[in-house]
Image 1 (tube, helix red, strand yellow):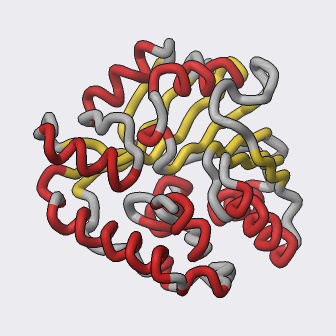
Image 2 (cartoon, one colour):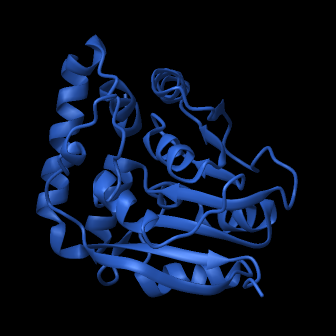
Length: 242
């Protein structure tokens, strides 16, 4: 069992810097037109996907590589009576045609992958004028080797770029208008699930010893290495709208 398996077991709805309050914060700064097609990559249990569907009346497609996450996301959407499409996918190219999405959302997902090819996939599936919103952990400065190794072992992070490096990755993937909507230090404790996630989807497996151990290790690592960690909410366009 790894960190992502543990998140699935506890039904985590907002396991990214700032939690769901952070999601609400960027949603207040972004306009998504009614009927727009929105892809969420790494949707977890579907909390953000459902919020976007409800707030914008958008057509939301949400994908994750973890079948247990998708199963819980479907329960959430059914409970809320929201028409979100959830799909389990494999790592690698996104299973969508080019220029079919108006927006791509990723919340603490890109950092767990080889960022450059995934950013190129975000760019490929977007229509001209479409944009990405990406909440990602970032390094306050170049991480010491031992700290980077801890993040690899604990979270499976491939690399932890600085905010400037994140912006450069987006520019290298041919995005324009790259900007930070929000940024700051990563909180040293898990956010209160937005004041409480009524659809947290916790099942008996959440109380397994391995899950408890992994979640405690997460809190220890975050507290120990807090000085190295920031986060940013990046918005980047595939061609700026006219």
